Amino acid sequence: MSINKCDLFMLESEERYRHLVQMLPDALVVFVDYDLVFANDSALRLFKAGKLEDVIGVPIVQFVHPDYLYCLPAHVEYLLSEVGPSNLQVKKLLRMDGTAFEVEIKAVAVTYDGKRGIQLLIRDLSDRIRMEASLNEKEKLYKTVIENTVAGVFVAQGDEITYTNPHFAEMYGYTPEEFIHIRVRDLLDDGDLRKIRHEVMDSLSKGTTKIHLRLKGRRKDGSVMYIEGSSSITTIEGEEVMLGIVQDVTFKHEQEQQLRMTALMYQKIIKFIPEAIVLTDDGQVIYANKLALELIGAKDGNDVIGQNVINFIHPTFQAKTTMRMDEIILSEDIAPFTESIVRCSDGRYVDVEISSIRINDYMGKNVLLSVIRDLTNRKRSEEMLVRSEKLSVIGQLAAGVAHEIRNPLTALKGFTQLLKAKYDDHSHYFDIMAGEIDRINLIVNEFMTLAKPHFSQFSSGHIEPIMQSVLSILETQAILLNVEIKVELGLEMPAVYCNENQLKQVFLNVIKNAIEAMPGGGVVDISAVLTAENDICIRIKDEGQGIPEELIAKIGEPFVTTKEKGTGLGLMISSRIIEAHNGTLHLYSKQNEGTTIEITLPAQDSDQERLPGGAYDAE
Image (cartoon, rainbow, N blue to C red; front, side, top):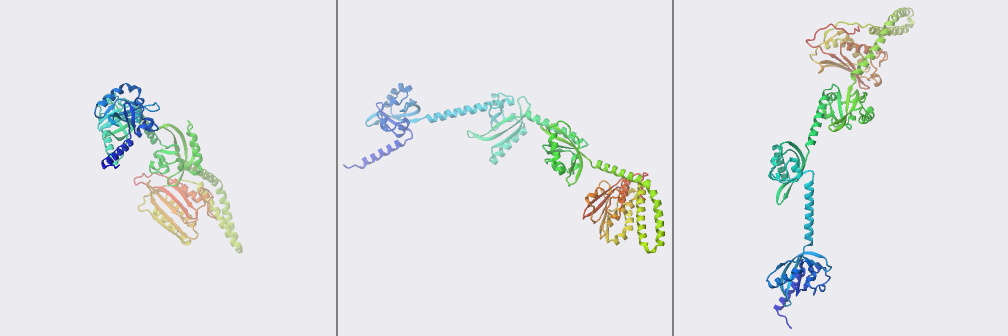
């Protein structure tokens, strides 16, 4: 039997429709006379049926939830009498295992195998209902969290406040209902409002959404409050809004202001205390007053702030200082002054004494306040006192024995000359004896100089002619020893109030020492400059072997000298003369580099009153 093209087309169409029905994601069933006659694969899965035979012939009422059985016949009759699809009012069905599930059903009357029946398109709503329930639960949770958050939460769109939680309203003194009529401009100062608008525009242009908030707010009663928090720019229902969370930090701000004022008060007090003061927090310098900066030679606070205070202590004292600081921070007592050595910015070391105490609640922290005293002048005074005592002892010794020694020396020298004339063959022995007698006599004369101080008249004088007078005396000795003397004196150097003969003796002694320090030749540099303190500073530098480090501190004491036949009294006398002129004499030396003598004398003002003065006369 042949199949015509029309029949073939209908068969192909039927197969295609059957395939589409089987591929439907929703369940599709057909029942006739309340018995199922067709179910697609989705329906089998929905009812948890293993195969089609399990459901074919089963009454539809077996799959309808008991709550809806009463209304099923009426709906079926209505569908069979009407043309077109309709929603079936059955909301729950049962699976093969008896479990219920919620559905949405579209129903339509159809003809199946020549009989009138009902086609049901069933959509399982279980997942959607669970998702909606979950969303509702989350929405309730989020709302509960936000409503009970102890922080202000707000949503702003333009100048409108579209949402606030109760705490935000409470912060400003409003009720949530009152915020319906509140605008952003009512809550902020004009300056902060412009600042927020600028930051929003800047964030949008940069593609960022986070904005840090630190603002001054205005409460309902007009009082000022300070708020801090953060916000982000987001989209709600297609509109850009600002979502933010803030805290009232007015108390914190007031505390910070109080701490800042307290710290400023402390700093003012410390600034005007006539002591070097340093504050440290866990070893870090957080403040140093002007005298402390001057002590270490720092230009300003930036040179020391943030550095470890141990960096300014001599290595020998660092461990002891660290241990002492740890002890003081745990104590309420004032630590007694102890000596230490501070390293200055230019590498110098200064002898100091330090006392520390713990300061509680300085900017919210416990810090150490240390008082530092420069011991340079005290130690110099102590050294001068020791030296004066030595001079006094030497003077007393000289006064007691000088005359007794001179008389025998005169007799010895006279008899030595007589013996030399009588014994010409041994004259060289007598020359040696005469030379040693002269040396003893020289030492006695220097003792007498120390033993008989007296005051002599001062007058105005200039350094240059005094120096030239001395150089003319030493020129021959310098040439013999192949020593070049270079002199560089400042132009128009002011006068000094002095005894010219005494200064000549000082320069003669110092320059002569410099020349004799270079027996193989060299250069002696002599310079004089006017300092900022209106002092004349004279430097005399040689290129000799220098002075051993262990002797530098003792130079100037009696009989301490690097010369083979020196007495050490010349520099002592020179120091005493310069001190009498209200000046200073310092010696600096490095082995194999040379020695520098630095003499400082106060310059005489043009209108200075000529007072009768005197100084130690070493003539």
